[in-house]
Length: 283
Image (cartoon, rainbow, N blue to C red; front, side, top):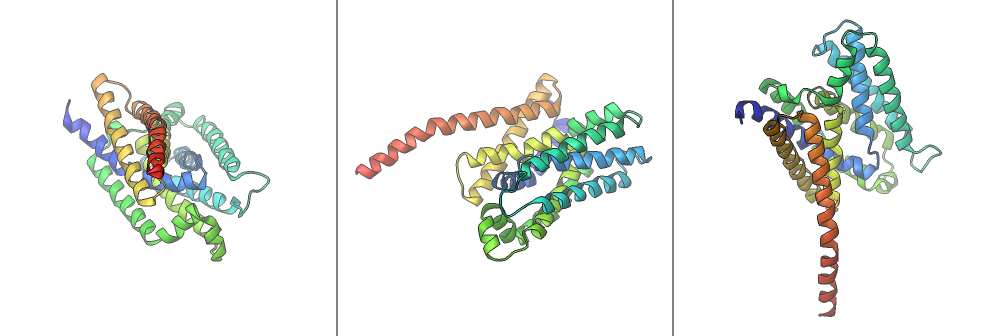
């Protein structure tokens, strides 16, 4: 295996999973599982509109379009969140945004050269061809977003894990939601061109889902999620290179395999843990 080809996508995956696995904890706690897909599709719609307007896919104008559409989605999700269960669940609104954005992207792509290939690139990304300068830029942006979340961690974590406490304190939930989704959208805007919509969703949801199988402590959740994401990425890339298979889909499948393994381990360990606890009570 040629390490010069293997290392850049591996490092890119580790950088992406570092921020996505943390954001995924918020997504699972908020029960807005498909918000990542919706924001990613909004970014994809923005990029497609930029191409239709005459911009190159990797240009600054294309990025501005993608970020603008993602910000619109962030504002919409923040405004439609309610303090109680409304007539239409928030997850339904998120799903509707995803479907409409997907349909709009197909319509726009139909009017652009290479429309079909553009949609495929959005789905699977270009992880195999990522370069070190792109990885460095990605790490810099994620470091800034990570610092922002660290500074605002009390607000974001409380709203995600203890929304009733945030309401009792009189916090403006919708304002903080907008800031959260906006920062989330910036991350997605940079991730989708590299990893694609499917893999970005896996980076976000699967590591967090694995972590929640074993603990509810926030520090342990973040550590387990990152380790799971790193392991699935490395294993998926190895299989892809070794057997000459498409990189993105293989890594996505590896995330699914790891989630299944974690579920089985949890199911097998639960009776044993209960037996140990019962023995302790008797003693």
